[in-house]
Image (cartoon, rainbow, N blue to C red; front, top):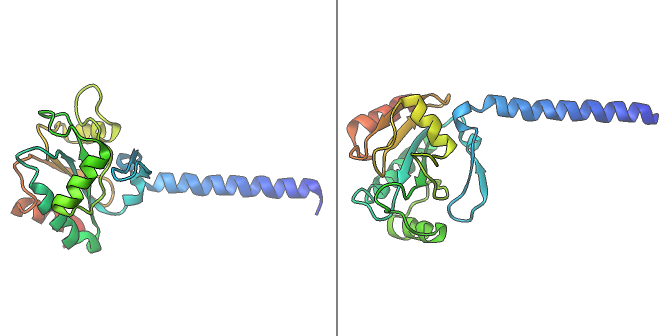
Length: 186
């Protein structure tokens, strides 16, 4: 094979691989096209890994009256994970400075106190001028900003934001559970 033929083949392979990467990005809903560091070890995580799943997105805090909701969120995740639910936790210090800790402190608290195994991400802002880009999209899609810790957004398997839920809506709430089951296809 001549050097020119090899270069043509390499070029074709390169463009083919670029097309595969583009197709993977294209198949990921726009709402999930964000990366955040994982809470436990700061490893970058692309939210596209959750495409095709129903996502319950929650801004969390360790020192809040609603913190006990971690238990219910973990129970939801454990019950419905095999059917396609993922709970995504975003610690935030935006409300009452109730999440002052470091990533390690938050991760240890969540796991040791509530056995949290659902994906959690590094602390970020979920409102205001420093809102993270994922939350900016959630706010735009629902026309509602988190009012306090443990505000929830439900996203379907296709990346459509279905609803926002107040902090007072517990993970056990019949309406929330029904909406999750409907999104899962029950």
